Amino acid sequence: MTLVKEAPVRPAKKRSAAPAAGRRGRRRENLAGYLFMSPWIAGFLLLTAGPMIASLYYAFTSYNLFTPPKWVGLDNFTTMFQDPRWQKSVEVTLKYVVVATPLKLLLALGVALLLAQKRRGQALYRAAFYMPSLIGASVSVGFVWRALFSDDAVVDRTQKVFGVDVGGWIGNPDYVLYSLVALSIWQFGAPMVIFLAGLKQVPQELYEAAEMDGAGPLRRFWNITLPMISPVLFFNVLLESIHAFQVFGSAYVVSDTRCGPADATLVYTCYLYQKGFKEAQMGFASAMAWTLVVAVALVTAVLFWSQKKWVHYEEAAK
Amino acid sequence: MTSATSPVVRSASERRRAGSLAWHVGALLVLAVVLYPVVWVLGASFKPSKDIIASLDLLPAKPVWANFSGLADGISGISVGSFFTNSLLYAVLAVVGVVLSSSLTAYAFAKIRFAGRNLLFTLMIGTLLLPYHVLLIPQYVLFRNLGYIDTLVPLVAGKFLATEAFFVFLMVQFMRGLPRELDEAAKLDGCGHLRTYWSIVLPLSRPALITSAIFTFINAWNDFMGPLIYLNTPSKYTVSLGLMMFRDQEGISNYGSMIAMSLVALVPVIAFFMAFQRYLIDGMATSGLKG
Image (cartoon, rainbow over all chains, first blue to last red; front, side, top):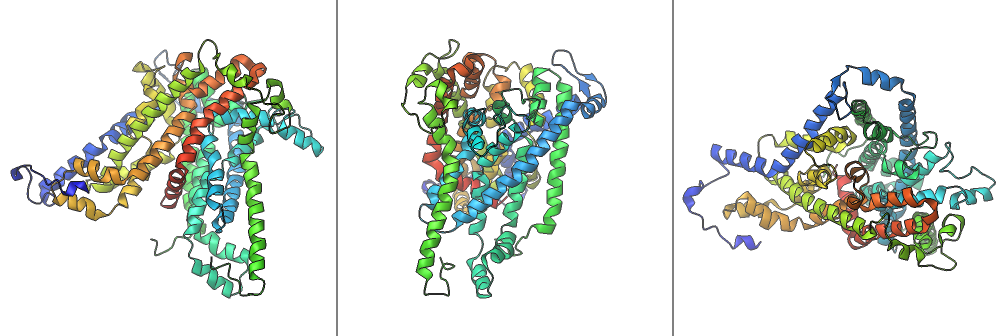
């Protein structure tokens, strides 16, 4: 606001009297717009659009970084679809997405409903529940997870009390993926906060009216809360499933850099990393990356299409 | 809360008290599970190496300092401090880059009416949904050809070029909420866009800038795949890679130091979180609501 005092001392000749109006003004606005955006434009061309075109090209070549890419047509894709490890990575990733995403969102919604009630210490709880979302991505937590779920550690011993002995989740190909699922669910704080914000927007009058009409808590949840927060639910489903498709760090760290045992945690990006950066098969890895893009685009498209059926948007949205 | 005012007046306060108790029991149960791993790592860092997996106790029977003093030796001749310095440099550069480039871009989207704005905005939002992995290999090839492997350049270049669409989006949302009258008044007073950006919009956008800065710091500090791909020399490693070195070279025998360093590596993130949790949580909430 200090600025208002500092009136311009520039000669009036340099600018037209009404800069906003007229062709010159419009041209100047365009120029200003593009100048301000120039970092993004450079970044978009150099680091997004350019690389996208390059990787599309690499996907149809055999390229090991050291000799120039050699055009091989659809070879990468046909090899990929027949590759048992690729098939395994698709299977592992789908299992992870399908199990982790709904459980995480269910817990997030449950806790958000709990925190939506006005109680003492609510802000503190909210902060504590959110914290894992920030530290969960670190290698440190990956190590903690290894320690908690390995043979003879806390989880294993607790299970033995109930007569279940699987020899630790980390070393067991049937269980290790679920330790990653648990790590993902543990980070329910981010979607929880978004749910909470959505719950706050639901008009209280609706609940009061429903209560007058004799609607119980379950009915109120089903007929008021759920439709009212469906846009937020949609956003969370979209974001969390897209993230789940791209999980890498936790799989790499928790399963000891090999994404095993027996490829049990060979998530898609882990295989992509192995192919690209361990085996220098850049063409194959690019083909894998584009297949992932198509898969994510399909999921996004299906979700947006299904939106019409279950997402309720207020006509008079604010 | 109006909904708590039940039509049955007689036992209303009784019921409210019982409800409150149930609520706290429920919340505390979830809290115990959520905080367990954090308390566990704190306790484990004071346990002798052999007890870390084997002992069921959350806290050590007899706390030992050995795990932390062991950190002073460093690993393979590299001091632990070097990993922290590298991570700090990476995180600070990332913050400067994101705040500068994203706020400039956001200003253009929010405050300047230029041809093609809507199309570019759609493109920018589109990059939010694009899997990062499709850019991984060509970006690696690009930086390799430019000779930037084993430097911080590939890790921070994108931050200076506003490629983190989430933050641009966050700032656009915030700047759109600022009263129009302010920049209109500035314009009448003859301020150009640069002046308006620097002296009016930027100071008023402080909450959005802080949110972006803290998120960027934490993301860079936690980043694993970037350093894994681009850094080769152990003396240039960040904390994430330093932790992996512990695992590779000391194995289970020095579990204690590994857990101690894991804890130390979490300290900046947790400290930032405690100090700025309001901004972080609100930032997360707004991004979902207006998405």
